[in-house]
Amino acid sequence: MASKIEGTGPVVGIVLGSDSDLPVMEEAVKVLRDFGVPFEIGVISAHRSPRRAVDYAATAEERGLQVIIAGAGMAAHLPGVLAACTCLPVIGVPLQGGALNGVDALYAIVQMPPGVPVATVAVNGALNAALLAIQMLSLGDAGLRRQFRAYKERLAEEVAVKSASLQAKMQQ
Ligand code: RP5
Image (cartoon, rainbow, N blue to C red; front, top):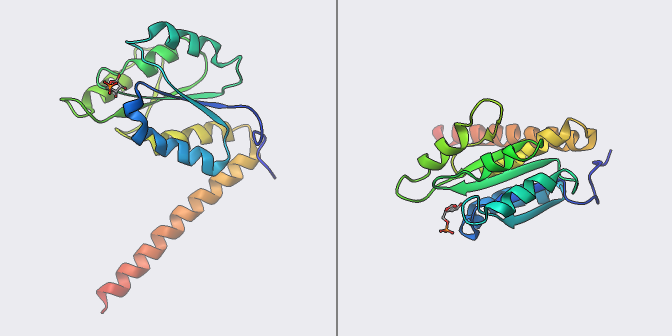
């Protein structure tokens, strides 16, 4: 069974606080491409272009998006501001960098006040952000869910191969 979203418009919005965030956020792009999930990507800063941030989130649902992934570093308010302005789920990716090396971004993204959740992944966890977005989309898409199950099976196979290879090495 094919995924329902194959060939549709973007269903995931990836938002970067700066183009300097691209090297890490490209990991999310790669995962979404591998799963055939249509996405859009852009740079919006909660601090440098706050009006654009509000407009983007406020119109995201009517543009067909179902999940937003927002990556930002330092005082990372972007995911929270987007979450404040949309009913769509927002996944925040704290990015490493600056004097505090990503701890600042982690705290800024994870410590949302009651009522406005942001699903926060690890520092630089763009890959997991894309997987979580796919799991959310999978709830209403059996084709995508099947792809995700196959992905998890591949993960388990990789561990089994590594274990066998380690065992073999130790017996030499
Ligand atoms: C944040 O400030 C961005 O998300 C980026 O991680 C950091 C530095 O931005 P640039 O000065 O490189 O544009 O808002």
